[in-house]
Amino acid sequence: MKQNIIYCSKCGAENIPADNFCSKCGSPLKKNESKQTGNQATTSPAKKLPVTSILYAAGALFVIGFILLYSAGVFDSSSAPVVNNTQNFDDPHKGMGVDLKSIERINLLEGIVKNNPTDKGAMAELAHLLNDSGFKEKAIAKYKQYLELDPKNADMVVDMGVCFFELGRDAETAQNMEETKKYYDLAIGNFMDALKITPKHQIAHYNLGIVKMSSGKFDEAKEWWKKTIEINPNAEVAKNAKELLESH
Image (cartoon, rainbow, N blue to C red; front, side, top):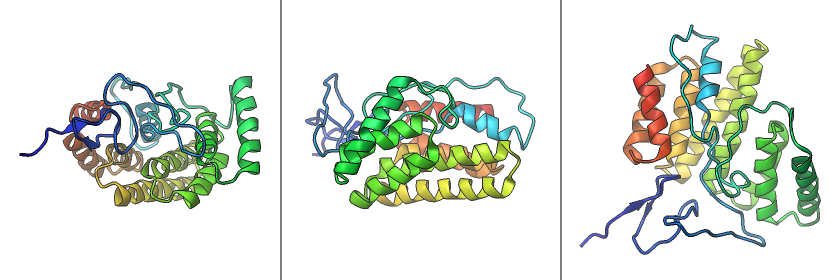
């Protein structure tokens, strides 16, 4: 008799009832809490591109006539934000507004990674903190360094794709459409790579819809959001996808 399946509310992965933590992203399936230490990478869901980013980018393509959607946890991450819990922040650019504690933590982690380049936990936290602080290019370099050690980590691949998307949005703001296309294509490539590793990676599906919409490919965006909902209709990211579908 087939066991009941528990879907992770963060990444949508299937788990058996005996599991306390998601077998894919490590998020608690109950109210338990767990932290990884040492040379293990801390995990939680991969980053979800913010609805506000989509609307901002799409504004260059058409006039938006609807109210901006509210997205719980503008980025759902997979370590340092992605490190532990979901962190809310809205569009940090190039480190503007980064608090002193974050800078101190970044410097500390830089030293740890320099002295121990195989410390995946420190490297993951550093990459996510750089990402969340707006240092997208530096974050990308750290994600690549991490993926040399752990190339099958779909969440990290997705988070690097988020960085490329944000760089593309910056290029679009500067009206550099050649750079915009380059970064959007890189973001799409990352999200597709994540699906090769984890075919039902829900946030990768959602993010593909975001980039497709920002590129003006609305029909393709809708198809990715429909697939997002099919994977796990009860996940928060599925609710965001449904709101986007209903708004278009």
